[in-house]
Length: 347
Image 1 (cartoon, rainbow, N blue to C red):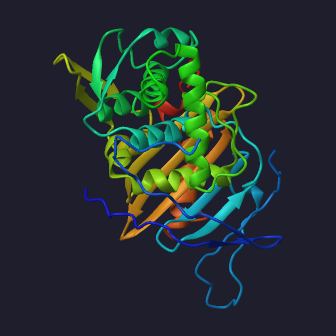
Image 2 (tube, rainbow, N blue to C red):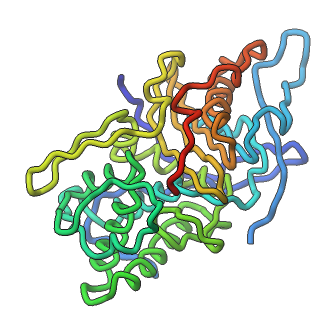
């Protein structure tokens, strides 16, 4: 399964809104692996629904789908190849990102550390909440950058997210800061990097996405982050693995199963490359998806879904993006066992 290299964005991207036309800057930064880059350091709720499809032969107008097209509270389908939004619902509404936060955490780590940089697990793992999703990394273990990113992105390890935050912050601000201070400083780096991606209505305070009232985003902001993640070969190599196996620097093997069940869904014709699942009680079930089919790339985002509809909405949006949507198919009829299992941990 080969992956098409995603081309960078360098200009303003027009967004067609149902209630009018507007523009949003989706210009992305570069995915750099330099270890010596230094840091430069409420939202408007608007319901929009946009749909552009091939015109029916008998009509000169595009088919427009409304908010009831998907069950989730907010969603986006974005054509990465054509650089246009195909569908949106509540795209500017404030939402809680849950573990989709880990996309900006990972991008920040990539921006500030090289692939060879060694992360050391320490007392910061004691900061995570007791019902968190875990990679079960242990105090004293050391990992190269991409291995610790895998520990965070594949099993959605909150312990790995805190390890990343503290190690990056101490690299930039000095080794003598406390664990709590390091997490706070890392949040500054996250927000600064997000702003460089054009993010304007988000605020990140934790590296894992565990619920905090002051930790929020919008679907449009998360789209900008997801575009940058899709550009990163490092990110997509990790998030496209149904089962990831890595070695720590002590030579021990670690394996983690990816919660993205679409990676092993044989009913879809397209190649799935990620990106991240998420859940908290407050955020609901969330998903950032990235897929390719016949040379076309689609990013989908869903927020505050019911468990049984998260992947169904994603498949519906992805089919729409690739021109495969069939209105005669009931996308919600069949539920996989994995989708209907109750999730108890906070991602």
